[in-house]
Each structure stands twice: as structure tokens, then as C-alpha cells.
Amino acid sequence: MFRLINHWADQRQMLPKALHTLCNTVRDFWVAEESGEVVGCCGLRIYTEDLAEVCSLAVAPGKQGRGIGQSLVKCCHGEARAMGIRRVFALTYQVAFFERLGYRIVDMDSLPEKVWRDCVNCPFLDNCNETAMIRELGA
Image 1 (cartoon, rainbow, N blue to C red):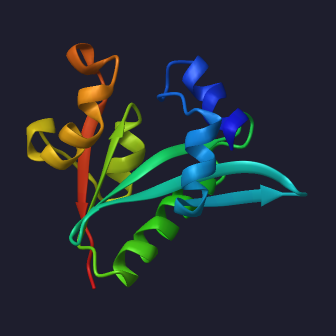
Image 2 (cartoon, one colour):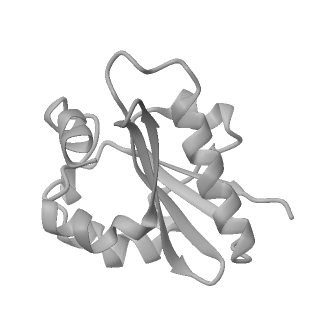
């Protein structure tokens, strides 16, 4: 997961993750494997009893376009539903991907939980170019 996430961070497609951060949050992640190799990962980070973030979605180069990312996000949706969470959001550069999964663009100001927990410490706070997207989960 560490290499996969930071590969895409090096490409400026997501924020990097420190190894200790991943070790502390590994239980928040779903992982896709092929022949014992991690080919995708995606996390679900809980913010409130009603709101969670689909985060750190990464699929290995050469493995994209095969439904791995979609399957991982759907696993996060299922987990959120099981906990009674009704809304999930993502900050992303891949707007079309999340739109296909039922997300819509929202203003970052509509996610104060994210801004005050994470964004205030981000080096890109004043120059954030990720798109905030949200999806309502059905029962």
C-alpha cells in the first residue's frame, strides 16, 4: 500500500502517506490483490456518525480500467452503510470516475469536518486543486 499510494503521490495525483500513518490506519483500508501482490487500495475514514471519507484510492499502473477501483469504492460504501453512515465524500483529481459512482461536486466549505481535521495541516491548503465530491448512500 505504501509504495502504491506514494507512486501516485510522486505523480501528483494524490497526497503522500507516511509509513507510520498507514500502519496506524491499516484497518481502515480495503485492498485488492492479484497473485499475492497489492494492486489496489482504498480507505474509509469516519468523520461523524453520518459522514465518512473515501480516501487514498490507488490502483497499480497497468491494472487500471479493470474495475478494481470501482470495486474498492463499493466496498467502502458497503462498510459505511453497515455503520449507518448516509453520506460519503472524496477529494479527488478523478472527477469523472467518482461521477460514474454517483458522486456530485460540492464546495469544500460544505465539508468543515474535513477542512478542520486535515486540510488545515496540508501544505497545499492555500493552493488545493482537488475537487470535493459527495454521495448520498441509500439503505
